Length: 353
Image (cartoon, rainbow, N blue to C red; front, side):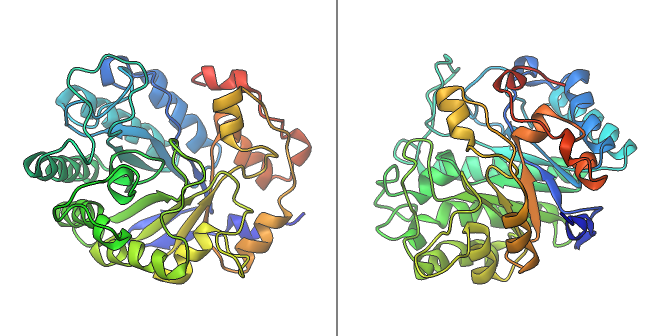
């Protein structure tokens, strides 16, 4: 199988990547009290050294009460945490890699941790809370640029805070941050993007991760057809999103009836912007089978990925579990060592290697 097209360079604004592979964000919760360790820095540098085009870090939280739901999820505010992230950036750049933080607020998704304050959600937040949260996102974005990151990603997916505002199942507000349509409920996300764009300027690449499914309900669709997708994502593109990261559980599944475009393919068709696809690339089972049932997954071929990519459906390919398990996964693909790719072992998720 000829994978050469996935090893062409990608350039957008000042973001220059050696190939089309992206390390997907994966929560590790191994930064004590929110401060990344040297082990965390080595974890990312190891993958940069083995040829990953762009590393998206695990979710890092903004400076808001209960913005995270596990104590050792990394912070993206405060002198100590930001100094540690500076060390991570330097390590990745020393290996010739590119890196972007994923900036996050978990919203009302407690994981059993006794948080220092009540969890925030669309229905519980005052307008002042919303305004302060938007400012906190902008502050994190400004810090990302100042620390030398190559881009940043806004986490707007999977049922976390921004996504909760998008979703009528969790946003019952009747003011300007609510509404009956996805276009109305997109206002909070749009204002986050605008504030971030103002903080980082026009030349810094802003990625946004979106999903239809939620951890609270895998079957949810925010957009039931292309018109609703336009109403949702065009305002985000106009606000300043450069690249859309279309999260699916299985990248090969088509998004709407009558078309074989997946979610990333539709995001590109609607916005005209570059997109990232993600969801069980190279594996037979989706990641929720692992998180929910502790299952592994067998390796699969890349023919369907290539078909969609070479047709122009998306520009970049994000990989999670395979890169978590094997730092050299991209290098093995480049060198044609496909026989060395291994099935995903759930035990690897407990390590930071």
